[in-house]
Amino acid sequence: MKKRRKNTMLRVGLILTGLLAALILLGCFWTPYDPEAMDAAAKFLPPCLAHPMGTDSFGRDIFSRVLKGAGTTFGIALSTVAMGGALGILIGAVTGYFGGVVDDILMRLGDVITAFPSILLALVVISLMGPGKKSNVVLALGLVFIPSFARVTRTAYASLRDVNYVQSARLMGASHSRILWLHILPNTRQVLLPALTIGFNNAALAEASMSYLCIGVTPPDASLGYMLSEAQGVFQRAPWYALSTGLTLVSIIFGVGLIGQGLQREKGGEV
Amino acid sequence: MLEIRDLHVKFQGRTREAVSGVNLTIRDGEIVGLVGESGSGKSVTAMSIAGLLPRRSCDYSGEVLLGEVDLLHASRAMLRTIQGREIGVVFQEPMTCMDPLMTVGRQVEEALRIHTDLGREERRRRALRAMEEVELPEAETLYGKYPHELSGGMCQRAMIAAAIVTQPRLLLLDEPTTALDVTIQAQILELLKKLNRESGASMLFISHNLAVVRKLCSRVAVMQRGVLVEEGETDAVFHHPTHPYTQRLIAAIPTRRRKEDAP
Image (tube, rainbow over all chains, first blue to last red; front, side, top):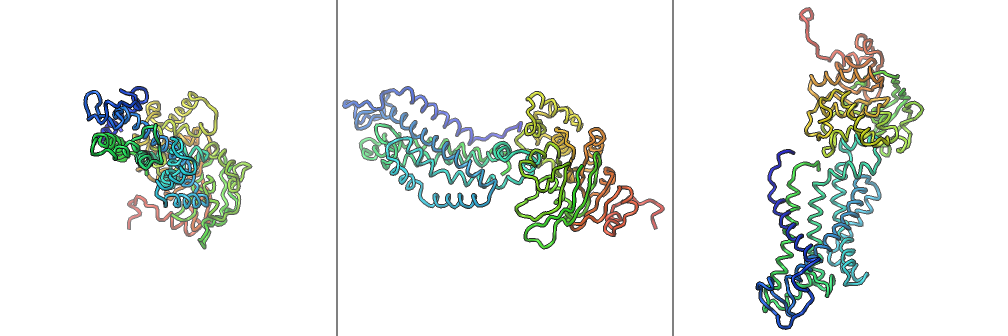
C-alpha cells in the first residue's frame, strides 16, 4: 500500500474530468456571453478571439452555450447515476445477500427491463410523465439504469456473503444491515466504482441521444445533444458548431471512461 | 455451562446424518478437545453451537444449551445477542478472517461496537488491553494497521483478541493453529492456556491434530462418522483408548522413535 504503482489512466482521467468539471462549474455562474442572447450581426462567425468556438445561426456564442449544455448533460448523468446507482445497489445488495424468491422475482424483472433498448424504455417513461423537464429525464434514465447496477452489485454480494471475514462478523453478532453496508459494501468497490463510471458515461450518452431526438431536454435549456441536432442542420456552413459540441461530449465520456479503466486496475479488493 | 443433548443434524439431500446423537458437556473453565477426521461431524457440531447452521437446508433436533438458552432453536435476534458476547469464535485461516479494508483495531473492537454503548475512547482502551493480553507487540501501532501488514501468527492473535474483547464465557476454536507453522502453533497454544487460566473462559478446541489436543485440553471427545465414539480425560483417552477408532488414531501419531523401540 505504501508504494503505489503509477496509474496513468486514472491520473489522466482525473485531470481531464477535473478540468471539464471546473469549466462546467464556472459555466453555472459565469459565461462570456449570455448563452441565449442573439446577435443578428454576428451570425456564423468562425472561431476567433471574441468567440473561441464561433457563433451559431442566431449569433449566439457557442462557447457559452457549450458550457451551459455540458453542465446540463453532466448534471443529468450524475443525477441518473446517483438515483439508478443508489436503488440498484440497494436492490442488488439485498438480493445477492439473501437470495431466495425475492431475488428470483427482482432479477427476472430486471431481465425484462434490460431486454428493451434503454432509449426506447426511457421514451416510454418520458411520454408517460411529460417531456421537456430535466427531472423527468433523470427519472426516466434512472429507472432504466437500475437493473444494470443491481446485477453488478448482486454478483459482488453473492460472492462475498460467505467469505470468512463476513462469517466472522456474523459470529460477532453483527446485524444484517451492519454486514451489508459496513462489511461487504467497502469490499465491492473494485467492481462498483468502475460500474458507476461506465453507468455515468452511458447516462451522458443516453441524455445526449434523447435530446438529439428532441425527447430529452428542450429549448431554451441548452444540452449537448440538442445542440448537436441543431449543428447538424448547419454543418456545411458552420462545421465548428458540431465539432466543438461533439468534442466536448467526447472528452467528458473519454475522461470518465479513463477513470473507470484506471479504477479497475487499482489493486486490492476481493471480488 | 454448555450442554449438547442428543444433537442430530442432517443436510437435505443426504442419506446419512452429519451428526447423529451427540451428547457433550463443557464445564466452566474447561478446555475440551473435539477430534476426528474430515467429515466426522466436528465442524457441524461447532456450527450448531455458533448458530451458523443453515437452518433452512437441514433437519436438526436435540438441544444445545448455553445456560438457559437453547442455541439450536433460538431466534436469529436472540442468537445475535449471544454471538460475540457470550461466545467468541476463532477460525482456521486468520488471514482470510479479517476484513482487508478495516484496521486491526476496528476489527478487534467490532464486538464492542455491536454489543455495548461504550464511547470511542473506552472501546479503544479495551481493544488495546485485549491486544496486550494476546501478546501482540506494540498494540498501539498495530491498532491502526491493516491486516495485510500483519503476519499469519499476528493475525491469529488479533482474531483471538477480537474474540475475547467482550470477555465471553465460551471460546469456540475451529482449528485455530492448523494454518500456522509449528513454532507459532506452540506460541498460540501457550497463549490459549494462559487465557484459560486467567479469564476462566471455557474453550471447545476443534482439531484433527491429536498432539496439539493432548497438549492443551483437559478432556477430549472423538468423533467418527457423526457419532461421538469416545470421551474422557485427555490422559485416560490417550493411554487407554477403548474404541478401536481412537486406538488407530493414537497409533497414527508420529513419534520420535527411541533406541529401545527400534527392532
